Length: 566
Image (tube, rainbow, N blue to C red):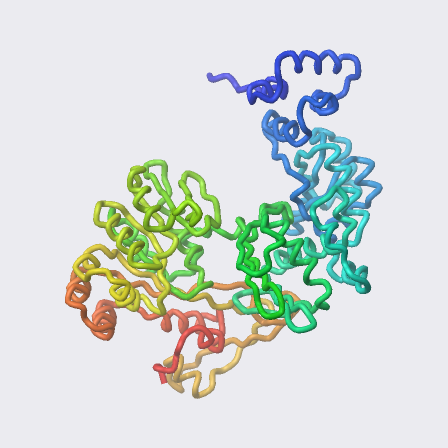
């Protein structure tokens, strides 16, 4: 019978990490005997270590999650559940709530304070289970002052600053930054966008005003218009948060923001582009909770999923995922990697940038500053003994050539390509300058995909298709079928759609297709051979989704050309 490992003591842990000396620990322990205060607090008070270091060490020693409240944005709805007096009395900060699971996550300096946890549970009527996470004592005090002391809703902050200019010098991240309404406004907007399920936030300066749009389910929606006076201050704040040069306004810049929202880590990829009326800023939201989807949840038909799994079983060759920007290629690739991820294989990725961290996978971002591009990155990776390589995107001949060389030398390669169809990927690679002989025999298969919006399950309404719709669906007059229309309700913010799903087509490249590639056959010949072998075009997948009530014909025709079915 193996002995249960005892949790490490915080003092020993800090010594092991080289943060504390034996002498300093001895002094702190002597002081503890006099005051009976927690050891961690004494170490901080005596200046031996910072509160954040002690907090992380304490979390490790106790086997508990710790949180840096400096990077946390709390939603105003959560704060309404626990009053400021209660938060201050028990030294807790409510961070996020899950109404379905009935849980409230709170930050505490003493996660073993059972009295405080029980009191909170009682105050909430026993409806919520309290989940404590570890935070520093002074961090909690400051956070209570910040979040409870000021207006945190977008409308409330806008009401607060509807008159007067904003002082930009106050936006450089000083201790009292939450007294500045623009700081809170930016945080509130980021929080609001994540809450509404947006994938991108657009800040677009126009003549006289600033337009703010969210991309939700692939469609841009205007949410706010602000006076131009606010824009320079908002732009400065976003640049400070993403580590950009605030003095540079004439050239494009890229950056990254990492925040804790609703109790989970959310990253924002920030891009600044100079335009006629000022800098245009777009933030891509990278929600780690949504990043990796199980291959069963991609929405593929049974036959398509079986075909894809068969392709991934091939030990070497290249597997391509194609589609326009924003069609979910990266999500599909991560799902495929997650499916093949195992301790028996070495998986390495080269991305621009790394969007979602994955366990057991060595991920690298391309870096132009050190001349690490896709081609040179693959060359370096081949010396790291990989089994599977993911190349973020094939953009040029060098990258395509190196990816195919990797596939030819016994590696399995996954990558993306910007083309409109699965068959269209082959002429695209030939156009990049790849020799047909090299292409033939090294491509396992090609997945082409688009994202479409799903009908809201709460408000969709059944209907009979008209004559044109019957033609597009390929059904006769006598066939009694039902289609569904978008309606709109509170659940979907009156849009009629909620969430997205992928439409896919899978092209398996066999020896016959390799022969056509080798002799530079036309796209039509390749497409005809694929159809003869059972290839289902993406339009057919769209029609399948309309007939099973998942979406509308209007939505499918928005992203896929259906005119050749007439």
